[in-house]
Amino acid sequence: MIYLHHYPASLFSEKIRLMLGYLDLSWCSVVISNIMPRPLLMPLSGGYRKTPCLQIGANVYCDSGVIARGLARHTGNVNLYAPGFAAHRLAEWADTQLFRVTVALNFSPEAMGAMMSQLSSSDVEAFMKDRAELSKGAVMQRSSVTAARAYLDAYLNELEPSLDAPFLFGDTPSIADFSLYHCLWFLDQNATNAPLLKPLANVKGWMSRMAAFGHGKREEATGEEALGHALECEPVLPDGLNALPAGIHLGDRVDVTPADYGRVPVGGVLRGCSAQEIVLERNAPEVGRVMTHFPAAGFEIALASA
Image (tube, rainbow, N blue to C red):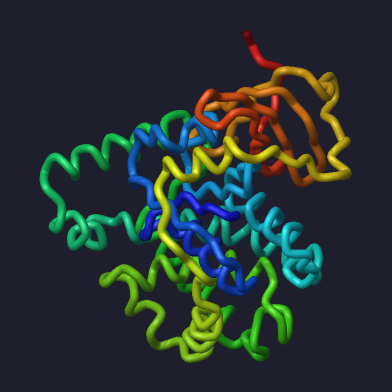
């Protein structure tokens, strides 16, 4: 059983929702708050605070990068990563640089105004405080609205004439399509910024083809149900996770921390590591023994300090 812990406006969640549709999967939707705390998710994620998290039995995937690889492995799909290096690097660019550009535009005063006007003053205060906590200690580059708009114009002016096939690398979508789509979807959801995409017929056509995959076979579930399901299952360790960092061994207690923002370390026993993935074993009364997965790229791993 697949559980996706997400909230509707999360752009990285939309990436995974659309991938679930493309893979024609049945899944349980656990809608979480868009701000902390998330007490029913923490036993599964170990404190990881970005969104989304995906749960397959007692295996928990944190970050859309490792979620996508986990879903490809779970379904035996060989197309998502088939184009290789160029598609992987385009996906990484979209998940980092283009993400920062779209966040700068959607969090501009003008774009934020309409959203915030629908919230109470206490809700606005809680949201802004949460996002300040999320950014604490962040090492990612910030763009001004002016710089972000210049970046976006340059990117879209190159993208529009390049879309001469159904998808970015031919007739079949790859991880690059899903990573690019969720950033443009985020812009398209904002009344202030959606007009930036409207004149681009090829981009809008490609977005329509992506959106047509839908979100798969979704049913609603509660956090309590997800915890209970994990408690009933035994985690599964994938094969081939034996490329270890210097000075770290399987069985060591380690901390894994996002390298950019949301820098909350998750501790556990290292059970697997490769160029793509880090897997920790963790235990909590609510879920029993779980395997928590993180991408290797973009995360730091270190021996636990205590």
